[in-house]
Image 1 (cartoon, one colour):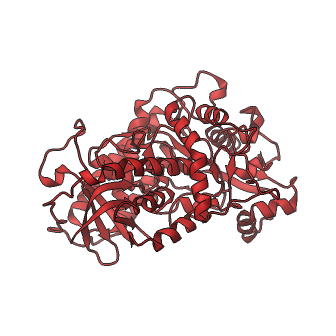
Image 2: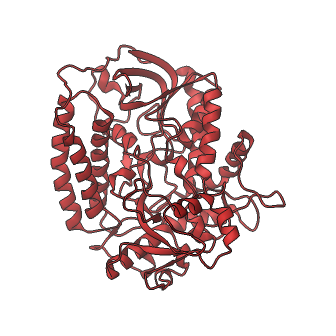
Length: 525
């Protein structure tokens, strides 16, 4: 079944929805979500959105904090664009109905998180992402120019390859014409042909056994673009959030927002000793890569399963008021955060690399834009500054909208693209093959390509992943489509890129810490 639209948006987080709402004023938008429209990484973002709002904060301070957190590997032009344009995007959210917390004088109640030298994080209690997502979803559902397909999964993007041309990675004239989209409910594959396609599929957290990401974060966008011969970069920089709630029976891991440390929470070991001061002068508010490695080191040295976040010295009433969801979640497990220390452990959280894009959000494949976590804009460098991700998504959604809508009238739908070919496939007899390979990929990445790496671990991971890749590709060729099989295939692609780019970087930098290439200074721990 062939279907035509002006803008095809793949993903329903803050990036995809922001773009869709703007693009809908210029043309017809088709937005697909592989599950329920509200299920995205955005929904689980607790902390907030970083933006310069009041003095003594300034654009220069936010720029400097971002560059420092990114270990000087950021694109400074991109940093300045995002930081400078951020406040205007915040005002748009407020006008749309997002209710950020305010002080009694009416000004925004700004929080401070790790790596920030000023209070600049706008928030709604401790469920900021959910508050933003619900407003964007409500507006998208009400817009007459936006058609939403839930439980639809993008399999591959359409390029000249599907029209019979030879496409390779050295070409810079590849065009995107839309995507093959799988309807999970009916089993049908739609050929959605678009003038402009936007990839906003989020991250790759489920490459790892412990992650704060929802189960849908399986590297779909990165894998699709890589298979289409688009440029991918910086995949070695996987950010582990230092503090997820230690609860081995729960997946995804419940995030304990960094704002809790900004509020005064302190990291302690099992003996009650505060340990972060020996790793960084900012202590528990050091940048995330430093804190995650420090916790990992403390756990390994002491043989502990987790460390603790201590908030028992803080004002109990204010603590409950500012962090109601964390309070409620911990109470369900018998933990009163006003009197008990919270057990925490690092968890895979954010992908700082991804699909390489320019200042307009356009990828190396023409007519294909990538927004949000799936993209690599140059903002984060080797380590993302806390709460910079949501503002990046908003800024680049605006820039991609302006660029793509200005050229819309000159673009045509590609004709003659083939429908999806089911020939020669049948239902796999043993779905355990998919489940087992999924678990093996997660074990390989967690054990060999986690917070701390080595050349030996990376090479061992690659050898094992190649075996699983060959098994899965053989199964994919023979089997009818299923979301789970496609996700496994995408995770393997994403894992390969993480390992390859980690192997290619012969240094420790930010989130990529290789014991065979120790950092030159102790501040780079």
